[in-house]
Image (cartoon, rainbow, N blue to C red):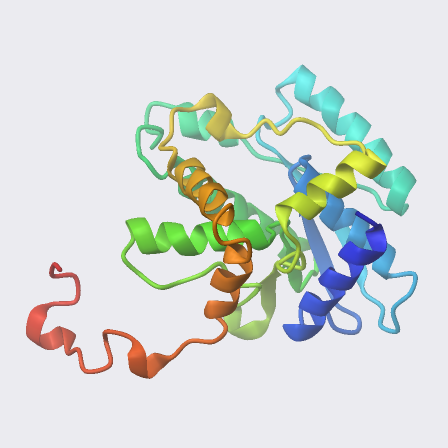
Amino acid sequence: MKERKLSKLMGQAINDYDMILENDRVLAALSGGMDSIVLALLLSERLSRIPIQYELFPVLIDHFNGDNPEMNQKIEKLSDFILQKTRLTLKILRFPMVQNLTGEASPHKRRDICFVCAQKRRTELIKCADALGCNRIALGHHKDDIVETILMNLFYKRELSAMLPRLDLFGGKMSIIRPMAYIQKSQIEIYMAENKPFIIEEDCPAKILPRDERRKKVRKIIEELVQKVPHLKNNIFASFRNPKPDYLLDHFFDPKKSGLYKRP
């Protein structure tokens, strides 16, 4: 997968959703895994050939708060790689995520451990973005993540909602953006196999703590269905940009009569 192809898809998503404008300050959130590394590389590469200019600040959250020697070594290597490839300094955001999630008062027995972790991580990223004067926070979610989230919300939350390519916060003063919203996971994997950029194995708290495997289950369902419906992921993604409100079940539904969450 040529970098040019991925850059084109990223550029299209950025333009479609006005994700990055002139003089924006963009915090690129890195986990160390392939998705976020590709995000940082592509965002940096765009700066050399597009007519607008923005500032990019790669940031990595250390879930071990600097207390894990093995993780510290991985972060040092990643920092060197980012500096070499982008000429940008990787900022390390220390946060005791693992400690918080494994402590006595932790919610680690809950099914939504990933949701809890994501909330805490996002809060820290927003604080960091504010301190750096950034008005955009770029996350490495791709099209597969969005489709999986759509089905998870449908299957488990009984709602039609998606992971937005752009989410404005604080009255539009800051936005969470997902520049890889049009890129599929398989395309990232091919790019990684061909270019072999440096990555570190993500020390995700979910690998340490017991959790519900809902996302894995949904991912498996999608993989099985794609064998029968090749354009399934694109169709699900597109359906949420082409809704037919008059044909949703709530067209004449009055929740005041039957209760918003009353079954069925």
